[in-house]
Image (cartoon, rainbow, N blue to C red; front, side, top):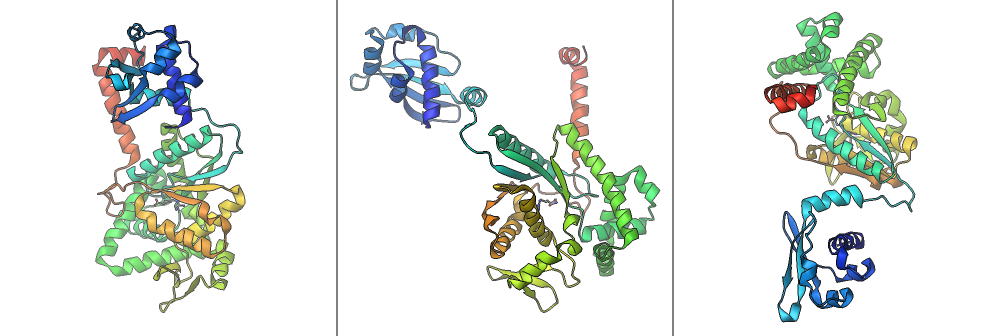
Length: 405
Ligand code: ARG
């Protein structure tokens, strides 16, 4: 137990025994003995001989008449001759809450660190699903904690708006014959339907996959018409996302996009990886890195980038921008290998800050797949919660009154 906590406890015990207490906190604090703990309580004790000496009373039962406060429970005297003591328990839940609210003051004698927290980071043009909600909640918590400790925190939302998935969306839009006006009316739903539709078609006909790849290549190579349409889809989706964050009370300091790190923009970084022999051409034309004897693709054979390539460039860019002391990626544990490889490549590029990256992982939500169309969307979950709350409030006269009067 830390000295800070012991001091805190000492104060609580003194409050409890205050009428009889002649001793100081410094005298009492070393006497507190910590025993067993379970889920709800921690056993503690104070040696009676010392207490009697410090209190100047021999009839310690007088002291025990004082009602314990809500944190200190079950005070009783242990009369066993060899080991006379007052034993008591601490209610863990109340104690933790009390410490957080009253005792956890940040240390002011330190220089604040620059912390970047990459969290939520959903894929644009695909609705925000429950898997992203966990990242949003954990990331927000990590950011709040670091802000409380007076670090300089950048809450960063890195939107996935690049990759073959956009080729699939384009194919789906063409096949379902949606116009831009249709999409404008109901953007997220129609883009999602397009994506699911194209994936279904690709399951029956592999040529659809190649077509989607070609469509994405048009974006990578900067075809103006395609890029303009794609920007419109992106705007619609971002608006929808911001609405959802507002409902949750979460505000980001910065938004960045995977497309910021498309092939055109990161040629120098890819070249550095070649010069440092980190990547080399594979038989089928891809450029790959060898990580623990496994080949990891970094550049596709048609020159387009991958999620990993863009993350390498993004990390370098963020270091230039924020000089971070620590950068957290709050992403489910299915991406553990990805972040391992990312760090390894940055080390190999001789970037001394590579060790400052950390992956905060959490369990995956099973049974949901955007591709198959079985995702559960956050907007629907929030709507359902709202509807249930309203129904309950209306049904219960007292909460109805408190809500509406
Ligand atoms: N957009 C990704 C996904 O939904 C998560 C991105 C996390 N951040 C990152 N820098 N890779 O899976």
